[in-house]
Length: 237
Ligand SMILES: NC(=O)c1ccc[n+]([C@@H]2O[C@H](COP(=O)([O-])OP(=O)(O)OC[C@H]3O[C@@H](n4cnc5c(N)ncnc54)[C@H](OP(=O)(O)O)[C@@H]3O)[C@@H](O)[C@H]2O)c1
Image (tube, rainbow, N blue to C red):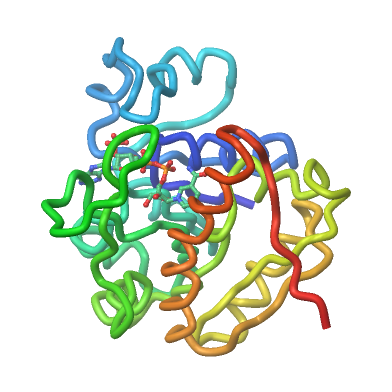
């Protein structure tokens, strides 16, 4: 089944590689495929240029965001930077209509000017916007009313999302939220194919507020455990 992954960052790459391994036809979306392939510098997270990465992953097709969404049979994963996601996805609204869109972005504003900054090993902690009274996922759903938005994956590094058994033998929890039962079922199927066994449906998309705000807690745990330590969280009941 054709699945689109909109994005070329580290998280998107994890999904692209895993979906290809699972035998899916993967369509990657980027702003400008030629410009993306021409890059020679690592991205802001230090990932190698996408073209170099792609050379090790033959058979992956690249398109604009809209063309990749068009080619998806049903499922589209958005790995577009959270601050720019609403605008970029709105430009592909026609191609995304009726489809399931998984949003895993954090609505980070990088290098914020804050009265009380949070120093981190890599600079000031980004600010969340929207936060508390709205969420990125809800904004995407309002901007794309014909698309079935599901918030998922966001509480984990994407390398762990596609390989949950790599942490604690998979004994941790993945969360999903959204307004569309059939879309959440499709995302649940994908998560099971990735190896997840504890998938907690948090109900309506408003729950995405909590999922996105968890980003700061995820960072705090990561700093406590040491940079690069992979971990998960388990809801014990
Ligand atoms: N990486 C993870 O493990 C992880 C985990 C949880 C949450 N998240 C969140 O998920 C989101 C994506 O993360 P990521 O690591 O996969 O990638 P990322 O490096 O945060 O974002 C890269 C993508 O955003 C697009 N982009 C950047 N600026 C844009 C603009 N002005 N207009 C349109 N598109 C733009 C880029 O397009 P081009 O392809 O054209 O360059 C690229 O595809 C982020 O919000 C991140 O915080 C990531």
